[in-house]
Length: 233
Image 1 (cartoon, rainbow, N blue to C red):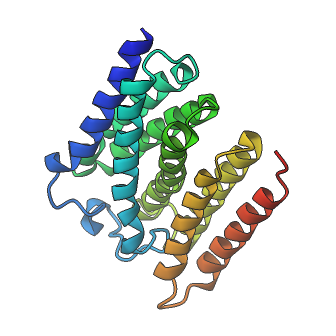
Image 2: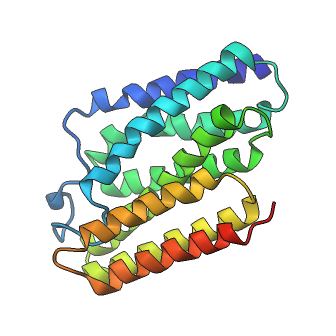
């Protein structure tokens, strides 16, 4: 089964990478997909930040390919594969579903996050840049993206105004990120990716300047860096 899971990870990674072909032109939730249109919501990072998906896609495929070709029977790689496969398989369906239902897409992205966090904690000690790193950056971005999706729902369905919705979502993302990074004691790529998303939020809220949202994002960056700075492992 070890070799089977190695093949399944690569198959799921490839399906995940080609999934944008099933949703051509998708650039995030449309404003009119919500009862309260979400035009320039403060919770959403600037558009350039989403370019990290190219790195995530490439790194996941390279890591999965190496794992299949060179580490298919390696017990150090085995524990992380089933939850990673689940996350990627669900992710392969996400874009088409997001075009139809933001609520269903939000549920799915939280499933993706939960599964990849399990995988990240199960990652072994060998081949750091091909086993740990791609899972860490994928998990880091999903930590931000899942909370952004939740913030859009809070604002889009009128539960909170834009800024309070963004603050709730950012606080939740930071809470998850700090707990994961503290408990993990490794994988700085995870925290760096969350910081990338937070910088994107700051940029998105710079004009017009939203002091509350940008300020919380800045505090979050310092908190993640401070946590890494105190980690002696």
